[in-house]
Image (cartoon, rainbow, N blue to C red; front, side, top):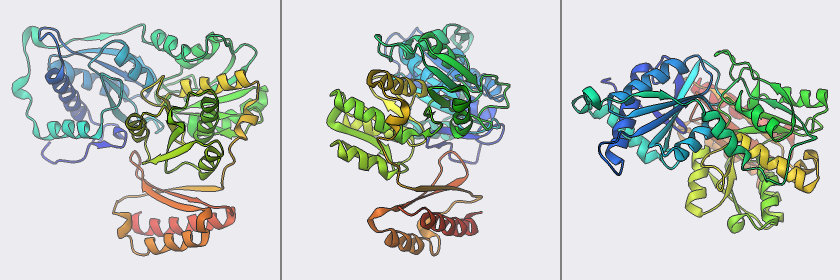
Length: 457
């Protein structure tokens, strides 16, 4: 590994499986580096081996990455506990619950099966900060750990945990008010053929709901394939077909959720934030009367929250940055339009099941259908475009781009905005244009897309 390349993006390591950086060679080095990190940091008895949890989603490549990570960790004298397919927030919870020294999730979240990724949680259940990821990256490229490998009884072992799903089910159910049930509700549930295909139906059925199950037949190749949180239209149609009360669409690792109301209208992460913020505010549970969201959120969320006297703070895109702001400011609610919603009193990361249950609790306590709750926030027209790129350069260095953005924003005045950014998980540049006139912002987004395509395709 003589050539040093960047490993960590906005959400861990991600890429096409069996190609850099998602190779077994890199995975083994990542495992070895995490193990070295926890061994040097672990307090307490030196004769007791540290332990690291590993979970995954349902991708075919998960098997090889899992074995490579485990081998690297064991080779440093650290024990591994495998939990199999389980949502990302489940690994965060179990890392704390089982007093593990770290948790690792093998998942590319909402990407298709050919991709995979590695996310790392500290013993506190929070994703590693960027500074710690950089230390791991430096260790992988520059740190020769070959002289630190134990022998004989010093190597670690790998054990499979059979009751992980049950532990997570109990935890998620305990976030739902004990005086409430879901009896009498019909739910359409799409698990995206991903990590929640077993656990999610179990949660809602045990709470009393009738569940119409979609995306619960993973084969290693069909995760996120025209299903789940990126394709909630299928659930919306099924809600109408089955006359359901709500539709729930999870992504491949179930850390995000998109809902559908009983009329089939999609309820995205901004609406979930609006519904839950209003409810928590009325109950005196919204710490500092503040919500945290990203720059991709619809300005309609800010407009609604202001009517309640609630402050909205913006962060960079990525649920990790939302969590960082929540922790720094002592806030309790934040999320992304894409469906990550974080309730700090319950979770250390986005949890699609917890978020869905929080909305269901508001529906039950207020006795209002989701369509009525959705109407609390009115969306300002918004256009999102993803332009695939083969190269990256600083956006401010692209000829004519700044002038085009300035012209569009001048025309929109204070009634709209333009936001451009490179994805941290995919080879795309994202274009967001908001404004009161749909035709006008469509035209603006198309002009920006054409310019970026010429420069970056």
